Image: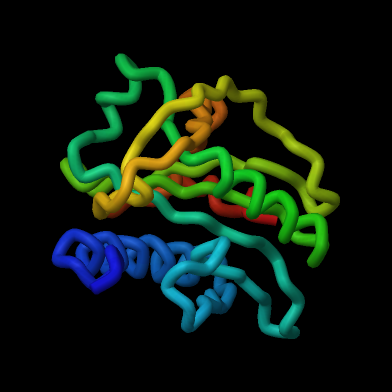
Length: 170
């Protein structure tokens, strides 16, 4: 059984779909996903003409509420996810975003990682460490974690209310 098929994996994929559907509802874009559970990005969004508008990686943080990030000041993501998203963004000429959903309060916030040319827009620190292969456990592997500054993020949806920031998704 792969990590995606575990109880925790199924929960993370369900949370990802919630965020993906909120993005689609707010933008009017269609969110496409790969049939491969291990794809490099979670969604590719296109408009009504079929033009690709953005790439999105979605993270779920079940142990946090939005207010916790005032104290933490960063959101960690495996740097490989950022590098993959930036590479694909450059190849298909679409910006790359990371969305984060906090389950304690159902908040969603995002950061634009790169533009359609693949140019990085956010500076972050990285740390090398040994960690489980994925969020579901597995063998210990060497990883580089990127710590994205919380000040670079914009609130997308909080307590069911959207503050009107989604027009920056292009």
